[in-house]
Length: 253
Image (cartoon, rainbow, N blue to C red):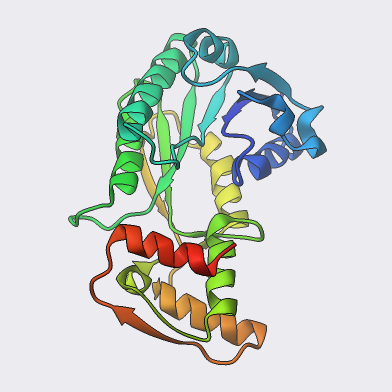
């Protein structure tokens, strides 16, 4: 007997690939979408679409009713206003609705982060959302992924453009941050398999390749694999977030 899944964030990069993977695994799939026309045409007609968003309590309950497992793939990226507070409220509302509707498991895709160090505001918010879902009363798997790489992903596009446009350059200090990238196909595999975890499992899992790289090292490896000349990058020790953002904007589309 097929199970019923709900995918939020289905129009995003990961969600748009998770949906067909669930369909191929014989799930009955629902998606909650504020703008159904933005859903990929490749599978839009194969799923049940609930029109609404996470701020709409009635839409959340409708979408979650009769669902076995729900995937929460939503987080704010615009940085506008009190986005951390907004994400907290949405996660609390979703967790409460899932508990009320008898959902058996939640799966959340968060961000991989170092222990015991200060986090960026955005990453701290993603960690907090995971903690809220873990305390919702519904068994939850929080999958914490590093940089997700795949054709079309924001991380891959930035890596490609930075490397191809900057054979020699000076860049911000975050290019030396240590990261564990992971292929999007692997992320999708783990997201699907998380649905089969035992009911008592309520915890986070770290996702990433064994090798730890800096962003500069990834740029150099990309250049090597694609046949570009070796890249040389100087690092500016002090560069404000605003200037760093402007720097990225100058060298990416």
